[in-house]
Length: 180
Image (cartoon, rainbow, N blue to C red; front, side):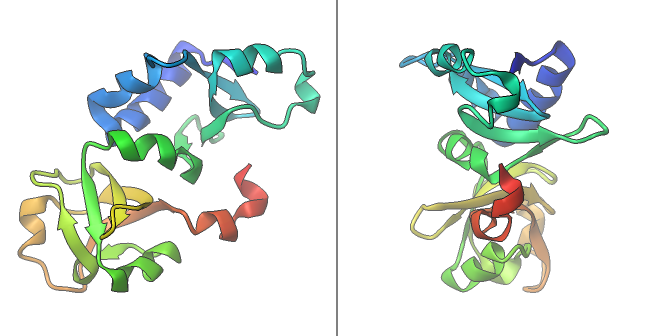
C-alpha cells in the first residue's frame, strides 16, 4: 500500500470533484480523524491514518484491503469510481437526482434513468455532470452522469435518457466476486 503519485492524485481527485465539487476538501481535511488516500493493487482506498499505521504491519501480498475502496485505475490510467464510494459521495454531492418508485428497480438493475422515472433534479445541473441518484425517501441508490442539463430535460419525451448509469447499490449483489 503506497501513497498516490501526483498524476494519480490528479486523476482521482478530478473524478471525485466531478461529483462533489469543492466539497472534496471535506474528505481530505476531516475534523474528527485524519484520513488519506492509498493505492494497493490498482485500487484507491480511503483510510484513516490510525488504521493505515496498523495495516503497515501486514505484508503486502497478504493485505487484501484496508479502509474503503473508492475506485480503481484501469490499464490506460483512467479512474473508475466503485459503488463503495457512494457513502462518501452522497453527503457532499453537488447535484442530485431523485427517481420515482417505479424507476428504482430499473436503475438498480443497471439501466439508465429515463425522464418518466425522474422525480426531481437539482436546479441548474449542467450536461455531463456527475450526480448522485436518490429515491424519493432520500436514500442514495447510486450515481451517474447527466445526459442533458436541467433546462433541456423539461422539453424531452418520457423515454429520453436523463442520467447515464455509472454505479448502483445492486452491484453489491451482481458483481460481488469482482467488487473487492
